[in-house]
Image 1: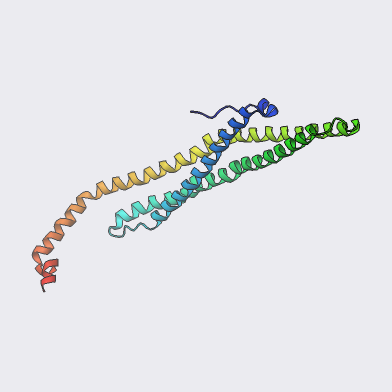
Image 2: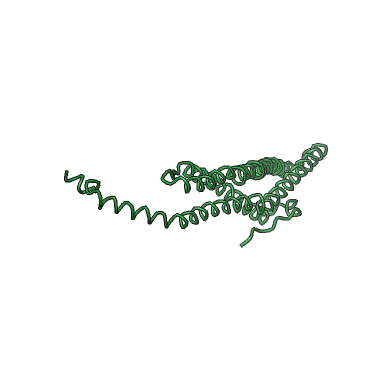
Length: 218
């Protein structure tokens, strides 16, 4: 199910339904923010694991896999970590700032409106006119903050389709390529591995003292 539509005209009315739909977008932004944080954490762990891989047994295989590994690590920050961190800080951060401004202006407007409603009818007309003018100014500020907030949320949701999804797909493609290359190299190396196992068996036959049981009994 998609997110409910946010209309700029609804900002002016500020109805309960508008607030409910706005909350849906806020929840989605927070969910995206948490997901990116977890993704960045997992990506860092994965990169750390890749850095600690050791394939020192076979030189030719090591060079090939090491080359793919270095390429993956080199590209990981450029295609995944940096873009996602930039998106989280700039886009979601701006939306959060918009929410702070929206909440602040909302509180100010409704506070003044409540005071105005509680004014005595006996107050001087000049005082009532001043209160009306203040309400008009605060409502305009609230309306502008609401418009900005709704616009930013819509902008983030739209940019998320590209600035969030594309880096992830790009990194996953590189990761799949890395493991595919490793699989292909392992397949290519299989005959040599079998020959190596055969040679080790011959060594044990020709040199009984090299056998682990023989060494233990001795």
